[in-house]
Length: 280
Image (cartoon, rainbow, N blue to C red; front, side):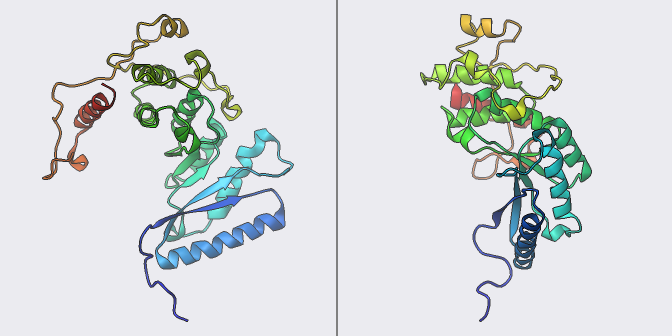
């Protein structure tokens, strides 16, 4: 029988392959052999994939504080000797803190490390997670439930972007997000004080705080509120920067923005105008 497809697979060309190592020799070896078979077939057919590595889902005998080392070790063994054509485009793993992330990211600069979001948690859980993971080497974030369960998904994603662009801290982002909810008369899942709590145990490590950055959010309903000021009296007012030149960026012939020709300053103007349209 002839194979159905020759060369590249038509349609979607990015798949997910998931492995769960459990610290049991035979099972882990079999998981590696199955992945090897998939990887070789994907390489023959020109099919791209990303690799998801879960923490053990059974009693593995590994102490929680050693899980990061265990996962890193298995990732490096899994990809050792694999040519570039057969490698995953990026990884999707649990974030185990600064040390584990730095070790993995620094081992191979060409390895794109991504984090999974896990349970919904508080808004601060999500914002702190993406901030710290990026700080220590992660380059991709795949948040499912954290975005899906958000009160205003688009505003939630915009805050994630502001954090990763270094324009706003996780704490400021939570306040700005609640300001958007209040401005749109959307009831939050929890009050601001509770939403500023860190509840994800995977994030309860002792990390040094980075310097706070200031971002202005126009018409932030919480900026002058008693609750917002009491939550953090030292926090600056948050307003989204806008520009009078709301179309001052390169455009394609169809009028859409030409991101390939934008400078950093033009991209900031475009982002500010887009945020103003959404939240203004």
